[in-house]
Length: 305
Image (cartoon, rainbow, N blue to C red; front, side, top):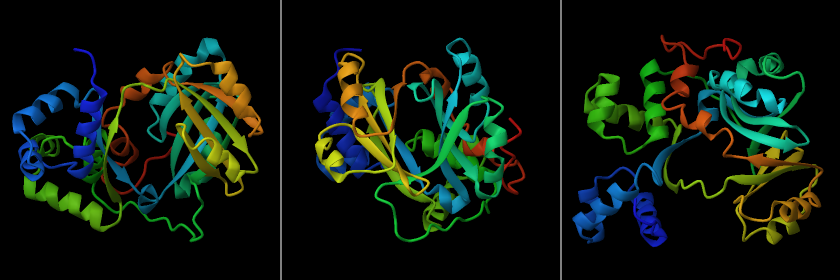
């Protein structure tokens, strides 16, 4: 591919955030731009550098979100990652070195199976810690968790939309063996039930292949102000701790960033997103459809894998 043009990429992302699932012809018509110019940009960047994905409220289907940190010897890192990859309730994996040397993973756990988390994680490591994680700032209203009350086809559809929300309706129809009106009904059902929050267009260029992760029991608002111009994310852990992630590129000065960041947290680790990226990218269409029993009666056991 020719040299990337960030202005073109950002222009495409802006359009797709306004019209995430509309056809290119419809977008061109609504925006008054040349269809063939738009199609050239789309063909050039979509799929490899730009993606549109569904966003879900997982609590609506009875899932709780956790982050786990597992000690894993460097020599066993990829073999353990391969085993974790088979478990759909462990959403992604990142190599980390710091207060735990090994793997961090996001977990989506059915509410009634939270009591089995220790048993599940002990399959991969004898030394681990985990926390329930929610968004920052914390909500005052108590979260209510729903149930899975849909057929298995809904799980497959959710995976398709999560992977690529612009998958052609013809292709979705083929994958589900259902008519287009039925698929539209299913999508509307997910939206009406509050599960499907919407769609978001993002740039995926592996621009950030490193991160500094920290945990603290006290979050100073001045820290957020200090880092406001950087790629940083904040989450709430178990209601009384906070997690901070600072994303950057390996070409930048790692030592300086680690030293700077460590003054604001009590636990700190370096994340290497590129070391296990292949495991995460090979999980196409394998999240909800592997969590849910084929008869649609609910979640499989997190200990099956």
